[in-house]
Length: 294
Image (cartoon, rainbow, N blue to C red; front, top):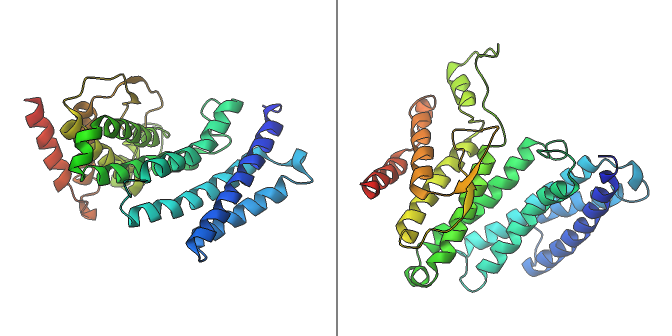
């Protein structure tokens, strides 16, 4: 681990310089100051200072966290622009690919240096979840736009399937970083509903959104890509909550979507009943899955 530290510092510094240059281009193109770009730039300036004279004393985890926060802010600015423009057909594919690449870099860096089996020592579960959520949510929004383009779908449904599988995989990955709280481990809760949520691996509203997004993307896959020949797309299908152990298998849109949406409805109408989460769309999709199966 000690030997990997300096290489992480060097690589993070290089990536930080590239990101700072990209932010400069974005700022000039925008023609005005943006809160997220300003914050991202400030984080990268701090990163540059820490990577300066005392590079050998720098904590790789702190540096990677600064870089990750900057990337999250920078890409958020770009995502908002894409959404506002409804993902222009001529340029969105390339931009989405670039954003996914930026958001994947912190995780790739840790894996390359093999500093921890689950990489939690460097980034922590919350940042890892955030990176997976942002990639999955971006592809969800992009696919939502694409499903409205009938001519595009006729020509490129295979490409839609790839985007859907990738997006679902990121969202399921996000749901599987943390293990559910085991209620038989002497853990006490004042609120039984909270205990039920934690035992189901639901730690935030974002976890619920990830479940609904995954189910909806499975619906799009079955609706628009069902006539394609099966391909060996692999995805972690452990959707029981946040599983510690995962396995890979070709993604079955109906099976995965049905499993995760049943759980979504159960949670929304159970522990979260008083919060009035809408389950209408989830139930309609489940009905579609049932009729498709029959």
